[in-house]
Image (cartoon, rainbow, N blue to C red; front, side, top):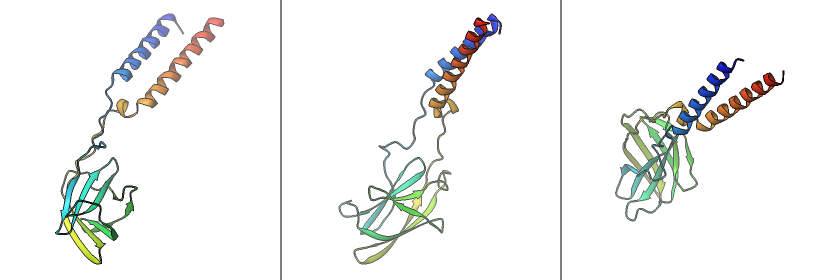
Length: 164
């Protein structure tokens, strides 16, 4: 490898390092402080949604004091299709957001049993499409690993050429 080629390779690596270091991190659209979206309410219950990266957390609360309602047998349908729910550690019901992230309103129907009654709440939920950052900002750690491995390989090649 000629000296000119080594200098060019080092310059490319230095530029890549600067790009990786200066790239802004992708802002997470669903941060921990994301406000809840009111999906549906009745005289007894209110349902709020908080979007996360890959799901929507549904919180079923009593309308009177906004405390978590003791619900059982919760069924959620989106646009007429029954959805699979999982229970969150905070008492919420997690719903996949894959089909909801198209910036159009979706009809959500929640059936919940509480205090000996069965209540059906209906409302609209609109989630914006996910914001994607650049490849570099989304995969910064991988970029740094590739850069470090490239530097070590170039140094090994340079040292092996020097010894010959």
